[in-house]
Length: 314
Image 1: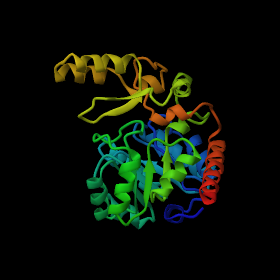
Image 2: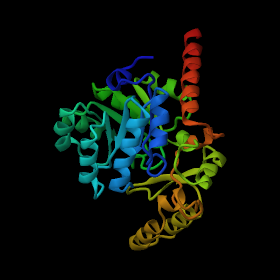
Image 3: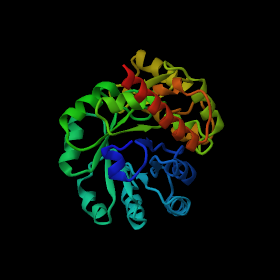
């Protein structure tokens, strides 16, 4: 299947593995997805510079296919991470949480395609005006940092597609090929999946984290810190305590302290899925087995084709 994104990035399938701190802060997941015809994306945000350099070197050895790098532009180490990515002449940047304008010329000079993650129509238009090559549009079903507006992927992607001319990658609420087909029908040019790739051997998170995703249903996630920069995570002791404090009218300082006392690292690396932030999307309820990443891509493509044929028969 050819779309503007597969043509732009040089990939076989309109499938992008989302950058997930710790889960895809490694080479094996990226290599497996890219070799299977999708776009693997390494999450550089939590990585030490030397580890990031080594992972990029391993990726170059492990695949000759396109791959992506995610750098949150508001990260205190963003400048250093961008320099490392530039030195490695990465093929695709999937940037988030900041403005792209000042970085585009440098990366465009080495042939890097720049995808920018947005969560509103306003930011989509700004990124397009800045000159990015394509957008990744996150809806509220997505794990991690969905839009504070809580607009769903179904609505937000369709609205953005109507407002911009550049290719759009839809993200949030998808774990199978039928979901990919639905978002392509809205006008998206590819789909980004994160939670589905947590349940793979290549994802570098604790087994407790993976089992929590498998055990989750579609209503097992929640938004923590609504009204600010919320995160979507699986419900656990931390999220319940935070929500109880909000309901009780706790002062902002107390809420901030509660929020900072928990972390994604605590869940992802240490396996504390009760008091850590188990970031995952609503699509966790559609994930019920751990599969190699390449097999996930193969099944997604097969399911997409099944959905396409079903629609053609209607």
